[in-house]
Image (cartoon, rainbow, N blue to C red; front, side):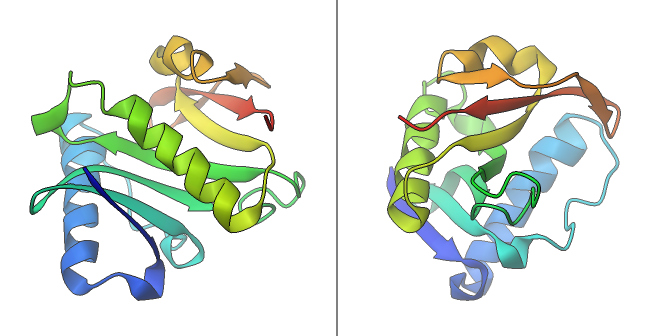
Length: 152
């Protein structure tokens, strides 16, 4: 896996197309959820792309402390976490999240990380050090939980 950590304006058109196509394949088509994935927040994020040869195999986006949740000025935010269908079941999710944590800390310093986890993934994210920090909620018809990972 070749990892690429880029600001929005550092992404090539090919990178941008690949990440948008993967996000739409999984979050819109596979999960049968009609929502606007191009939500206007990508320009404020850093993007972690995991390349398997020439194919995008994993992705997440991350925000600096206070950008997504101004009320939680110390919290970085990770979202849009995806393992491509052709690599599911390989255990790639853990290295993706570990690399995301590493890149966030290297870019913005140590601190807590917030995620909006699909509720059925609560145990998975708990195994990565996240804990539920509030009531569940519906996001685009899918149950979610706010989760936070304290700094190490």
